[in-house]
Structures are given as structure tokens and as C-alpha cells.
Amino acid sequence: MSVKVILDCDTGVDDSMAIMYAALHPGIDLIGMTTVWGNVDVPLATRNTLRVLDLVGRSDVPVARGAAGPLLGGHADFAYHVHGRDGQGNAGDDAPVRAAEPIPAAQHIIDLVRAHPGEVWLVPVGPLTNIAAALALDPELPELVAGVSLMGGTALAPGNVTPVAEANVWHDAEAAAAVFRAPWRIIMAGLDVTMRVLITPEHSARLAAGGPAGRYLARIMEHYGDFYRDNAFGFWTCAMHDTIAVAAAAGTLDVRLAPVVHVEVDTSGGPGHGQTIADLRGAYRGYPEQPGAHCAVLLDIDDGIADDVVDLIAAAE
Ligand code: RIB
Ligand code: CA
Image (cartoon, rainbow, N blue to C red; front, side, top):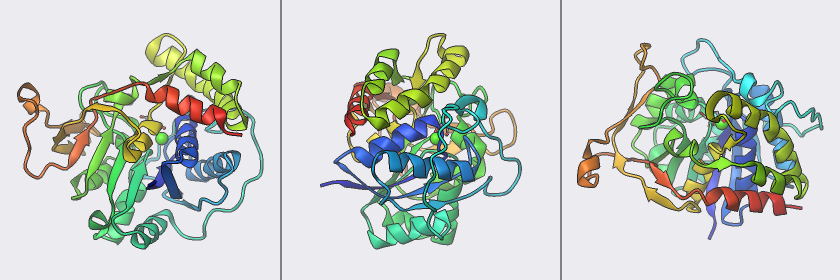
């Protein structure tokens, strides 16, 4: 049986890999996608999403465009320096794409979830603006989804936009706070694990030797890997980030440690703004149950998922 997923992306490079994985994996039923501002502006995120779906032969997946900036307004900050001017590693791809659905992302999420009550995993891998907007429109959503598996936050690892904050949460901390507060089952795939599962030059060569999707992904990763070489690791590599949240929802990830704990988002506007404060004080006692906690924080996973993802995408014709 396949797992129903709605994937919400700010489609830059790692999002593109996540889309390919979700669209191609036989155990995942990608019933819809939504787009959000973040890595790039939302028109570009939408265009890139449609393009990547076309590349993997999944033009059947409905895509709805979402928020152009934070839930409460204010400055929208993008990451073109990481993902390229086109959000696709300056690959120069300008293939035409179909139109997005004529409804806003938040409504698209609600409609799809209500069509399959109890079955759908929401997988947001950009700022949480669309998910918070859907929640505000339909407060029953937490009872209607299977769960939320998000790429965002960090419990013990350093942040990537501030010393303590991860980009997706920091971009719209108020939206993230609403999502973490809502009483649904959450899996937090944060920097604790997503900076440890790395795409190597050998993976990239395997993709480049594969089908059209693999070749495209290898091309767009060049610029992204250069960014990680120069700004994080000192050697060429790509952090997988978003695909980890998809795999966690689908159950295709070998999870070694993921305590279910309380997580709160700092919205103070101070130096901790955007931090996901996870209560890991039970670490020395094997993480005893925390009444009311509903967020599984991924702290250790098997990095074999990188090979699985690369093989699946490289093999796509
Ligand atoms: O912090 C990494 C996250 O920010 C990833 O989702 C990346 O695509 C960007 O959205
Ligand atoms: Ca993303």
C-alpha cells in the first residue's frame, strides 16, 4: 500500500530531488503539490515544481501556488546565492510548463486532505506559511491528516541562517510556531540529520550517467554543491535536506533515534528567533514519555537513504 503525500516546496535544488523521489517512488502516492516562497520567489518555485514533475513524467500531479511571503507580512528573504538565480543551479533550463491549479495552496491542501480523511501526510519542505494558512482556514485539519513530516528546525546541530535557526523555520517563525503548536503528529527532519546525509561526487556521477531526471539533477546540483563546499564542509557535497522529510513520511527511512518531545519555536525577534527549542532533557534516561508531546525529532538515521534516492532517480527513463 502506498502512502499519500502532499508535498509543499520552495523549489530550489534539494526540493527538486525531493519532488523526484516522491513522484517516482512506488510506495508514495503523490496526490498533490503546493508551492511557497523561500529559496526563491513563489512564481519561480511554482515554475520549477511544474518543470521537475514534467521531467519525471508526472504532469498528472496537481500543483497549486501558495504564499509569496511570511504569514504576518514583513520582509521576504530568498536564497538565490544557494540555489542560483533560477533556483535550479543557473542551469539555463527554460522549458515551458503547464499552468498551476486555479486555487490557492492552502485550499488545495484542505480539499485533498478532506477527500482522503486520515490518510494524507503533509510534507512541507519550505517555510511553513501555507501549512499555517491551511490550519487557520480549517482548524480540524490536525484530526484529518496522518501527520506532518517537515524539513525544518534543528535540535542539537547549529543553525544555518543564524547560530541557532534553520532557514525554513526562521523564514516564517510565526507560521512555524502555529504548526508546531497544533495537535497533529509531527516528524521534524531538521539539520541534526539533514546535514549528515550527503550527496557525494560519486552519487553525482551516477545521476549524470542515468536518465533525463538524473542528468538534470546532476546538472543543477553543481552550483549547490559549490555553495556547500565554500560555506559549510570544505569539500564538494550536497546536503539532501528535503528528501529526508519525504522518506520519513513514507517509512522508507531507517530511523535510529527519534524521541517524541515538546518542541517550541522562538518568535521573540531576539538572537534566538526561529530556533526550535526541543526538550531533550530526557536524553540520559532513554527519553521517557512526555505527556502531550507529539513531535518526533529525528536525531539519528541511516545514511543509506542517499544511495536509494540516487539509484531511484538515476534509473528513471
Ligand atoms: O535549511 C534547509 C532548507 O531550506 C531546505 O528545505 C532548503 O530547500 C531550504 O528551503
Ligand atoms: Ca526546501
